[in-house]
Structure formats: C-alpha cells, structure tokens
Length: 279
Image (cartoon, rainbow, N blue to C red; front, side):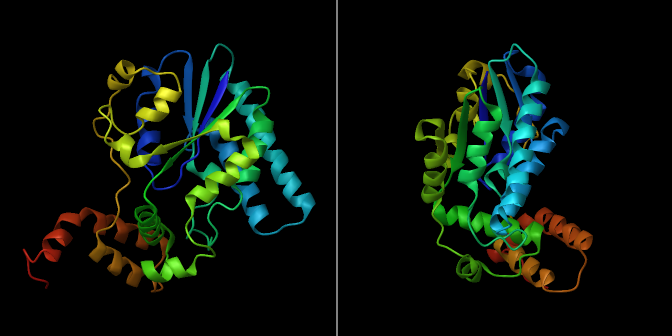
C-alpha cells in the first residue's frame, strides 16, 4: 500500500481538495481510501504532527521532542491498522502536517520542522512507501493569502508589509521543499503548481488524484457542485479586520465579524471601484 501525503502548503487550495475528497468519499475507486484533517481517524496524526512541530520550534529538551516524535509514529501505525487490507493507496490530506502556518500562534518561521516531521512519517508508515505531494504558488500571492488568513482567523494585527518584516526569514518555499527532500529523499516529494492545477480541465485536485491512481475520466465524474475555495477578505475589508483585531473584541465576535465581511465582498468591490459612495 502506498501512503500518499498531501501536506499543503497552506493557502494552496487544501480546503477545497479536502472538501472534494469528503464529498466524493464513496465515489473513489475501492483501492483508494482518503482521509483528511477533519476525519476522526486522522485526528491523532494531525495532533501529533502539530505537537511535534511545537516541541521542535520551542526548543524543548531532547526527551520531550522524542516523546512527541513517538506519538507521530504511533499515530501512523494506528492509521494503517484502521485502513485495513486491500488498498493500493491511502491518501492523507492535511496541510498541518507541514507545520503551523506562519502568522498563527505567533509562528515567525516558515515550516521549520518539515524535514523532521517528514522523516518521522516515513519511519512511522514503514514498510509502506510514503510519497509527499505539496502544492506551491507564486511567492507573493502565497504570502498575501497567508497574511489574509492570519488576519481573518488568527487575530493578526499587522498589515502585509509589516508582516513580511516580522517573519523570521524571507519566504523561500523552494528552500522548505529542499529540507523535506533532504530528509525523505527527493524522489519521494512531488510539487504541483497551484495555478496550473486550478486551470486543468478537471479542476483543482486533479494532479493529486492522478498520483493516487485515478484517471481523468474518474476524476471528471466526481461531484464538485457547491465546493468553494477558502475565500480571502477584500483588501478594504482586510484593513477593517486588522483594526478589529487590535481591539479587545472576543474571539467568537471576531469570527462573526470576519464572516460578515466575507459576505460583503461585492459591496467592498463596488466601493473600491467608486460604484457606490462610502457612508
């Protein structure tokens, strides 16, 4: 059985792909099983990878980091046991496997632990071969989208230019991928251009599903109605959300405000283009 791990990156269509997999779970070939971060069966792996990432980033002592790593290995074995026999591919889609998104929980480094996490996954899933698939997009668009998400959901209070300066290192996703390749072998890491997959005739997720063994006819038959990309705030709404984040407003109220601002995207667009006057 092949273990195919879709590990993000964040803001490259992961939410859409996971919704696609969940919505079409019963339409996949019988030789392919797919789980994602919201599934109960994959939650232990999700939590273990995040805990291991936190332990490494926090510089915890070797014993604590080793304990966190053992939890990753145990979660891998449990997921294989739950999958049973007869599968050709177990597809795991979870962008948190790469580590915490920059801007969330005060994270200033960019997937600093991806090599160690990847090596632990290869060991935990052995003897099953592990292949990693990561979606990548143009650097500035990716950074802008990450910033938007951190403002929308994680109370980031910095505008984009200050956020870029606040990060501990320049954005270099190629360098992140190089660390993963060094840890697990370059032949076991596939990179998909988000923009290319989005424009494919069968839509976002096509490249990943092909690697899972589905042909284009099978992919085209999957249902996509009602599935949307994780939306970003309009630039004007983003500025407003940053101001709300700087207040003492509670988390639940901020999430409600973000939903309202998202729902008013067309209004903000009309305002930006002068089609309506500000009140």
